[in-house]
Length: 409
Image (tube, rainbow, N blue to C red; front, side, top):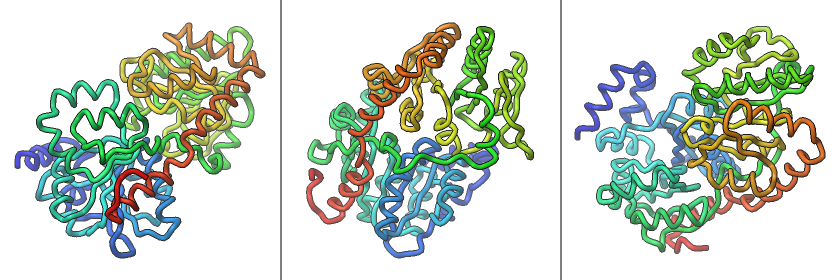
C-alpha cells in the first residue's frame, strides 16, 4: 500500500507526472470501440515503436485494442501515429489504481512489451482471470544480475504470467532462470527487429531541408555524444568532405541541453520544429526535436551513430538504422544491445568506435568506400530477415493462450 503515496508524491514534485494524473490513478483508462479489447502496454518511445508492429497486426484482423504507455512521450507518439487507437498512461502499480483501470477497460488480455513486469498490475489481471503475456521479452545483461538478487520477490509475479514470447533463446533462458515455468516460455523474436513492410517517408518539408548535402545521423544520444558527433563531422570537413549532421537526443527533456552543448562547440544549429525549416547546409546541424521521425531520417543518411554507447548506458536499438539501409557506428557500451552489436560486426554492417577520433575515422571509411558500405548493408539486412514474422508469432501466441492451448506452436 505504500506505492500510492510514493506515486502521489512523485506527481506533486514532477510536472511530467502531474500531467495525466487521472490516467495514472486509473480513473481514466483507455476505452476501445469494441468489446473485450486486448490491452497492449509499452513503456516509452522505443517500446511503442515495437508494439505498433503487433498492434497493426491485431487491428488489421479486426481485434479491439487499447494501449498504454509509461511516459508522456510514448503516449504522444502512439496518439500521433495511430490516432484511432485509444491510448492512455498506465496506472500506477498500486492495487487501487490497477483495479480502477482494469474495471474501466475490461480487457480480455494484457500484453506487456519487453520487460514491463509490474507486480500489482499482473496480480490484478490474474484476479480478474485476464491472461497476461510478455512479448518481445528481454532481460538485458545489466538487468539479469539485479533480477537474480530480487528473485525471491520477483518470482511470484513471473509465475503469474500466462506466457512469455522471448526475443531470443538467451532471453528465454533468463526468464526461466528467474522463475517463469519453462512450459510458458517460447521464442517469438524481437518486434523491434521486424523488418518494416515499407520504408518510412520523410515529411515533405523535412525531405526538402535534407536534400542539399549528404548527411549522417547521431540518434538516441546522451550527454557528450552530441558533441562527439559534431567533432567527428568537423574533422571530416577539414579533410574536404561535404557533410551535415542530424542529432536526435534520446530524451526530449534534454533538447535544450543538447542544443546549448552543440552551439558552445561551434555548431550552426537549426531545430526541426522551426516554423520555416531552412535547407540544411554543408557543415550545419539539424536538431531533431520532434517525435517519430528518426526512422525516416535514417533512411536518407549516409551513416548513423546510435547513442548510449560512448557513455556507459548500454545502448539502444542498434539495428533501426540498418533496417533503413544505413551502416551503423556505436561505442563500447552495448550491454543492452549485445545481439544487435554482434550482428553488425559479424556482417560488416557496422563498426565499434571508442571516442571522437575513432568515430571520425570509422565514419570517413564508410563515406570513402561506397561498394563495401553497400555490401555490408546488404549482408546485415539479410541477417535481419530471421526476425521477420515476430509480430505474427506474437499474435499467434496470444491466440493460443486465449484458446486455452499450450504455449508452444
